[in-house]
Length: 156
Image (cartoon, rainbow, N blue to C red; front, side):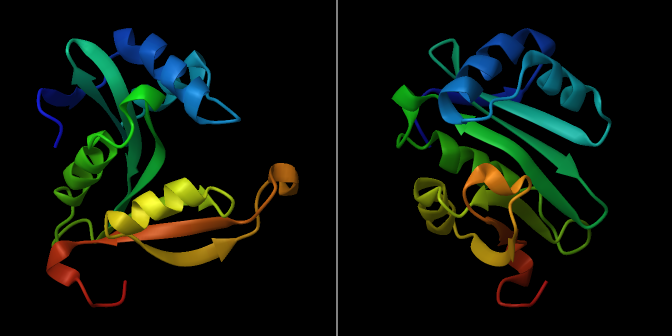
C-alpha cells in the first residue's frame, strides 16, 4: 500500500472530490446527487483514500445477503498505479468470510482493458458476460468476482 495512504469512511463533505475524480475516470460520470443517494442507503458503504490530506480515490459498494457489489471505484489519474486501487480491493477482500459474504463483484465494460487487467492482477476472475444496457455503450459488460479467501478454488 502507498505510504501515508489513509482509507476511511466517506462523508458528505467528500462528495465534491469524489465527483471530480469520477468525472476524470468515467465517460458517464455520477453527479453529486448520485453519490449522496447511494451514501444515504443503509446497504451502501463509501470509502475514500486520502494522501497528504487530499482525497485520491473512492469506492462505493453495496452489501447483499451473501455478497457485496462494487458500484463505483475510481482513483485520481495522477495517483494511479501507486497502490490506491489495490488497497481498496484488499479492504474489500477483508470483508469476505465463508460465514457471511462469499464474494465481491464488480462490472466492467468489455472495452475497458485497463480495468480488466487491474482486476485480474488483484485476483478477480471474469464470471459472467451481459449485454450492455443501454446497448449504445459500445460493448458488453463483464462481471468479475473476488472470492472469499477461505473459499478459493470453490464454485460460487
